[in-house]
Length: 467
Image: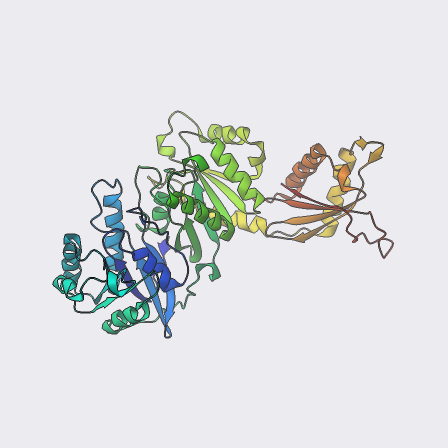
């Protein structure tokens, strides 16, 4: 397993906390990929985005603030991420605050960057109007000749800034892979890593990609942005999406926490499959159950990873798996794997499990098979009478896959009682599987006369059932 190394021109945006790095990052990409807030230390992981600069593919790396306050419990993790970004970059944009002037930390950072002998441009940010600008000569002491006043918020001089840094990069090697700047357009399964805070999502991401792309800490809530990482396993690409931990709404204290929850929701919408991480030493809780139901409702496939198995003692894996399924009977169709992201246990099985689950999701069942199944299921257990009427299922066909959707033509959708619905769903999974995938059944009633005698295509009252 390894990260795909892209040969685009890489430029890192660095600076002390709260000078506007993420605002500049968003401005360059033309969309809100990084969370912006006045609260210091908002960005913790390094984010990567791409855009086209006059026909050249540019990769921008947004880093957390260097030399953050010692009171910030993530200071060390943030600096490590920022320094990795600096090492990866071919050019550097140092962002400073044009309203407060040069600070000691700006000087310290400038010296460190200049020692790296990389092309560098100084962006004097927050120059929104002439009255708010600090005199330009005040920043000459940083030793960076290529300097430009900008406003990331309003876009002032941002294009000129990029020309300034791009001119200093002597050579540019285009990406051989020619990957699109939008990760959603990549021809690779999109896997969202989800779960509660501090359950090990970022650790798992780093292990699977053999990198340190995500900041890791024992403190819950380290990850706030949804971080995309493209990696390969057995010569096949996968787009992994590391998300913020799912919290109760009452625990979203800061604006960035609310934005993080929104980003997690968007990651769910983008994903083909979700990998739910559960702390094996704690077990399945209420929040995980709600998350799984939400994933099912969205029509996404799902696997469950019982992480931190290294902390579990005197318990067999079979017993742990049985306990999880007993807590939520609807999980019987979901694959469950015990892993230890920290120790690397069973990680080689994850991508195989993802492939198998996605293959199940795309299965198609012939109409003949479906109706033979229907005949056996109804003969085995007939629907009960409801107010003197009995449910009749005339016909069944598969309408689509991803998620698997089936249409049942019936005499009256209201006669489909919940217990019989569950019975049919259970029998269906025994017959056809669809491991890890939700099933959608659409009931179409015969309330109007069909145009042809034996065709039941007229929609009466529709009822959509999700399993």
